[in-house]
Length: 173
Image (cartoon, rainbow, N blue to C red; front, top):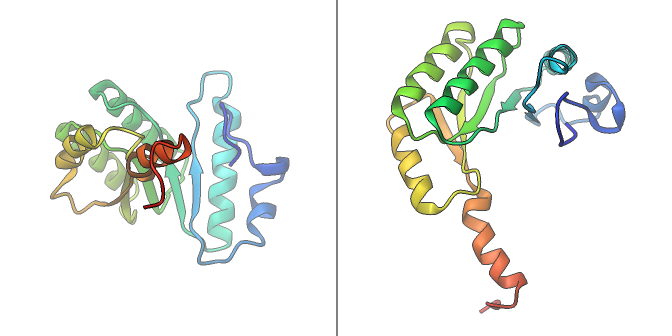
C-alpha cells in the first residue's frame, strides 16, 4: 500500500495483482487500511476486494492492519471496521490491531472475527509507539487469549535509544 489518507492506494498506481505477481509466494501481504469516509469508502472497499482477490489468486496470506488509539470507543470502531471489511467477503489470514487495554473490547473483536472468518490465524498486536508502561497494561489485557498470536512493538522498543543515539546522547558502547 501507499501510506497516506483514504482511499487505499497501491504503489505506482498499479493493480494489486500486477504488484504481487513478482512477490515470493511465501511472503505475507501486509496492508495498512486507512480510515475512510463516506466519500472514499466505495473506492477503498473496491481496492480491498481487489487486494484480497489477488492474494487469493496467488495463494498468499493477507494481513490487514487497522490503527486506532487505545480507547473503548476506538476499539468499538475497530470492531465495526472489521465487521464491515469481512461483510465484503474479505477474509484476511491475519489482523494487526492496536493493543487495546480493555479485555471486554477483545471479547467483541474476537467474536466478530471468528463469526465471519473462522479460519483466521489470529491477531498481531501493535505497540503504536506507546511507553513500555502503557504497553505493558495493554498486553496484560490480551494475555491468555490464544487468538492473539504475537505483537509488533518495534517503535516502542527501538525509538527511545535510536533517538538518543542520533542526537549524540549515547554512543555504541
